[in-house]
Amino acid sequence: MSTTDSSIATNLAGIQLSSPVIAAAGTAGTLDELADVLDVTKLGAIVTKSITRDPRAGNPFPRITWTRAGMLNAIGLANPGLDAWLSDIAPKIVQVPTPVFCSIAGDSIEDYTQIARAMDSTASVAAIEVNVSCPNVHSGLEFGSDKGALGELVASVRAAVSNAKLFVKLSPITIGTPSSLVDIARVAVDSGADGLTLCNTVPAMGINVHTREPVLSNITGGLSGPAIHPVIVRLVHLMHTQLTRETGTAIIAAGGVTRWQDAAEFILAGATAVQIGAGLFADPRLPIKINKGLTKWVARQGQAQIGDLVGQVAKRSS
Ligand SMILES: Cc1cc2nc3c(=O)[nH]c(=O)nc-3n(C[C@H](O)[C@H](O)[C@H](O)COP(=O)(O)O)c2cc1C
Image (cartoon, rainbow, N blue to C red; front, side, top):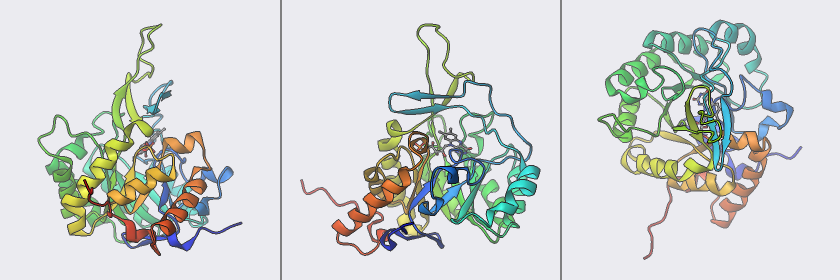
């Protein structure tokens, strides 16, 4: 078994990762199901699917479909709930040979805080990713678009978490809210987030022109994959130049990584690490290829460590 080259090891908000490549929430199961098809030590970390206080069946099928440049999903946060997570999943985390980040979601500040506190007491949880950006559930975007509610939520979760690092995962869409994404992110950072995950899926819809029905039972869903990649590159660049370069807050970028070049672009834009979602469905061994591509790129760029390239997009010469 070959090991990952040390030039792509990186430090993400104090968490040492062997690679900047992370499995995105909801695309790698409740823990390490990917281990059936991928040596998970090739991943810098795994983010588990979002866990809510009560079990959720999610939306009726069909809830996933492919588009020409990615995936449309309306899973609706199907998950076993906190009690089952604590009894069945938490004890196994310690055996996973890569850091485990746990994604959480809820309907209220109390929900989020209760889940975060319970997960944080499981010492092997490296980070908690607060999902305030799910487009597929009622009120899923509420906390991520209201600065007041987000500030209260992040402060409350922060007070409940002392072992794990805290990431807040935002929606790329702020249309209809009076705030920009940077304004919203600043509230999360000021309220105690160690890092930002940019971003969740883009609200979207598909229609079957023969039956004239929406393709998803939920009618709308979240678009991910290559179609959204350039949109997220811009947001990561904006966030880095307008907020995180100054505050030192780590960014994890998520959106359409299917080649090493996509991951490299995110790093130059200002991300310390990248998540892969839709790309894992198409090729679960993609992280291995991306690690190899990034290793060669770091050497070609004349750098010893990939961290030296974070935010290093050059000025155009003309
Ligand atoms: C099938 C599917 C399920 C997802 N479930 C979750 C989830 O439970 N929690 C969450 O925060 N994001 C979830 N996401 C969003 C991904 O974590 C990621 O932010 C998004 O897909 C963008 O990355 P990608 O373009 O590489 O897919 C899901 C995405 C997909 C495709």
